[in-house]
Each structure stands twice: as structure tokens, then as C-alpha cells.
Length: 315
Image (tube, rainbow, N blue to C red; front, side, top):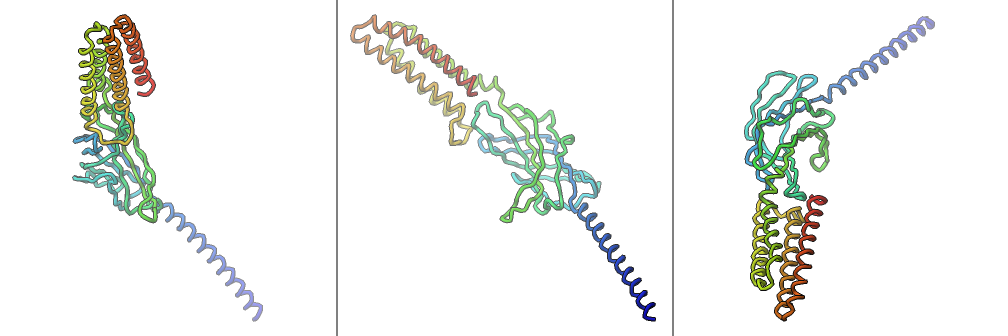
């Protein structure tokens, strides 16, 4: 009896051990399965239809676009919001459980970089984030194949260069919880010819007029000084008008460097004319003529060289 009882206990223990191993295996298996399902892969794409009310000084604009979420499995509950703006109109366009397609119109704001103005390239961004999901529940991936900018999109005074789209995680709140983040950006640049004709050509013509005063006779000194003085005032006013749409960036833009160079050249011409007038009034006509010839060649050469450095190297 004891032998049979002992054998029964051994069999019972073996069965119990096998059951525990099977239970542990099933728990691990289902745990892995749940973990795989926990992080849902969501492909995000944005197709831009229209840009309006673009204000370069503030970086604000309105946008009309399609926003598409494509899920590997059934789309989970998503609480997305726009981190750099807000939606004024949202229309759900599909009932597919594996896809969420929206037509959205909203107002947005992007920071502007004026360091290369007026040859700057700006990016109008639409930033999307999920305020409830974490990196363990939803993973955004950028669907470039479904993203783009409609050929009819136009921004007054700017040229559409292209677009970019990326997906990542962004820390939110004091706990810095990582949440899925998607950024779509449309790149725009100024029209070079339009910028040259409106901003640089008037100042270049003004400088040509000022430099041409060196070819006048020495008895026209007062006329020369009047032209140079008027040019200085005109350049200052033009500088103000050219930058009126820009906020104060806190650093020198290309426009500022260009205008500062012109101020320096005009000031040099003004000082040279004062010196020549002083020499001429003392009766040293030949000396003043030599100074005028040297000043003419020097100022023309210096102006051409400095403009070349500014536009070729710094632009």
C-alpha cells in the first residue's frame, strides 16, 4: 500500500509539474502576443491641398489637407491634436476599420528663419501628436508614398520647393512621457529674380548715380554733396520699407549686411567729396583733380569687389 501510495504521489507530482510548465509556456506565449498587439503600427500621410493667409512676419498660415492613418490591424482609439495650431473643420471620410481618412482645415504657425533673408528658405510645418498614446501603444510611421503637395498650391511671392515628412516620439509634460509625433513640412523659397528687381536693383542704380558724380567737374562739388546726401536718406528709407514685414530677428540678416555696405560706401563718397572740396577751395585745382581721379577708380573698384564678396560668398 505504501509503495502504491508513493507511486501515485510521484505520478501526481509529475502531472502537476507538467501542468505548471504548460501554464508558464501559455502565459509567456499570450504575454508575447499581447505585447505584439500592444504597439500598433500606424502609417501617417498628409496631402496638402491649399495654403492661405500666409503672414511671413508671424509665420501664421491656414491649410487645407487630407490626413490619413493606415493601421496594420484595426485602428485603435486615437486622440491626435495639432501641436502648432488647431483644426477649424474636420470631416471623417472613411468607415474602414483599418484606416482613418480626414479632410481638415485649420490655422497653424511655424517659426521663421530670417538669417538668409531675402534669399531665405522657409518651412511651413504641420505638427501632429497623440496626447494619450505612448511609445508602447502606438508607433507612427511616415507614409511618404501617400504624402505630398498638390501642384495647384501657391504662396504669393514664394516658390514651392518641396516637402518633407517624418515620424518620431516627443516628450510631453513634466514626466516627459514619449508620445507619437508626426511632422509635415512644405518648403518655400523666394523668387530670386523678383527679389533682385524689387530689393537690390533700386539700390544698385542709386549707387551707379552716386559713383557717376566723380565724372563731373570739380566746380560741381555742392551738387555732388547734394546727390550723395539725398542717396543716404533714400537708402535709409528703402531699408526700412524692405524690412517692414520682418520682425526684429536680433541678428544681421543678408538684407542688413547689404544695406550696411551701401551706407559705408555712400559715407566714403561723401567724405571724399568733402576732402576734394576743401582742397579745391584752397586753390589746389590740380591736386583736387588727382584726388578725384584716384577716388573715382578706387571707389568703383572697391564697390565692385565688395558686392562680389557679398553676393558670391555670403548670399
